[in-house]
Every structure is written in structure tokens, then in C-alpha cells.
Amino acid sequence: MKPVNASFLLNKEPIPTSPTLFEPGEGAETQFLGVVRGEEDGRPISGIDYSAYLPMAEKMLGDLIERGERDHGPHRVFIQHRLGFVAAEQPSIIIQVRTKHSAEAFDLCRWYLKEIKTCVPIWKRAVFAA
Image (cartoon, rainbow, N blue to C red; front, top):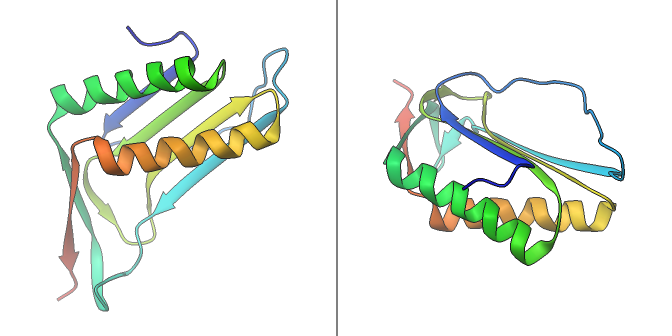
């Protein structure tokens, strides 16, 4: 079961930008926005094609968020990772963490990114420019 203060999306939709709405007691938001670079292994690319085994990826993201709240205390988190083709210079992932204090927001955002990259079954394939 997902914590009430968390959500995630795995989809092909563009990553939205929206203003921060703080809840009582929150004093910090850290946001990581990962953008597709225009090159891979020194070669130009037009983008990256992301794929995932959705049932497992969604379960693992839900478990990750539960573990984050259990191990790191109360916070709100939103994660979106795009799937399908994402053009160079476009965002592929966003992680937003809201907490009481700034240091914990930075630490949690970094922790979520590391865990997503190492544990969640999302794969990337560079699409090299012609």
C-alpha cells in the first residue's frame, strides 16, 4: 500500500512544471529534474527510448516510497519517470521531495534517485542520430 504522502507515475506523458504547494509543517522542497543529454558514449543521440516491466517497476516504486517513509521519517514525494522515446534536451525523470527541513529534503531526493537507478527495472536504449 502506497503511503498517503507519496505518488509516482510511469508513463509517456511530458513532465509538468507546477508551483509548489506546501502543507503545514513543511519548509523545504528539493526537486531533481533529469534531462536527456544530446550524446551517449561521445556520439550524438536524438533521444533515449525507455522501457520498463511495469508490474514489477510499479511495485518496486511503491515499496521504495514505503521504505523511504519508514526509514527516513515523514515527507511527501512525487516521482515521474517517462517511458517510450524521450528526445534529447527533454526531461525524463522528476523527483520532488517536501520535508520540514532543507538538509533532509536534499538527502532524500538523492537517496530516491540512487535507489531508482539501481533497483527499479527501467531500461534505456540510446537512439543515435543519423
